[in-house]
Length: 135
Image (spheres, rainbow, N blue to C red):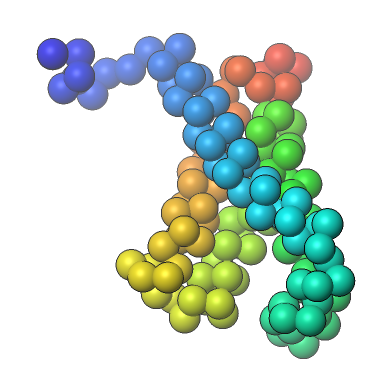
């Protein structure tokens, strides 16, 4: 019981926690990006034109963030760098799509955004491609 209440942690526990976070954040966002990738033409008709860059480019950047960057995060390959686009995409979804309704309809976007921000801060841990390469 005292271990559960302790603020001490081992490097193994930290690395295992980073692995779980990476697999959860990347693995849960990956299907959203894959759906947008395989139904690209259908999503183009209803997607937002963020900052006037065009619907196609907005959707392409979202697919890149949600699918490809999530895949890199799951693998632990350039995780800190790969976690930035999904965090930004989720902020845009929270801001534009859900009107910053963090405790309502934008809750999932907020959770993803903060989860990816944590990955940017703490890194991938040793159980990753980056960790195996010694980075």
